[in-house]
Length: 71
Image (cartoon, rainbow, N blue to C red):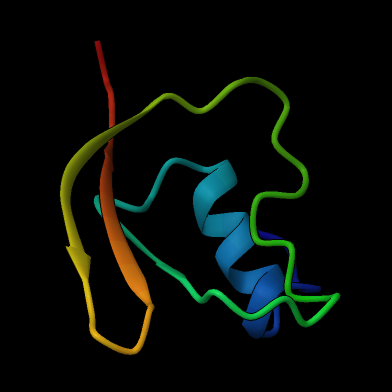
């Protein structure tokens, strides 16, 4: 990793780019806020993911759990 990787979105983006994450937990909130942290920036090619679990909560949030599809 580069020395510019200090934390937050940049840190996570570098982990993703170097295929160092075994499982992704993406929280989908039904409120649009207009911005966020782009963690998948800098990918040079498609990153295939396989859905392994999804959980919905009464507040409307859904958690999607993925793992890299390493076929």
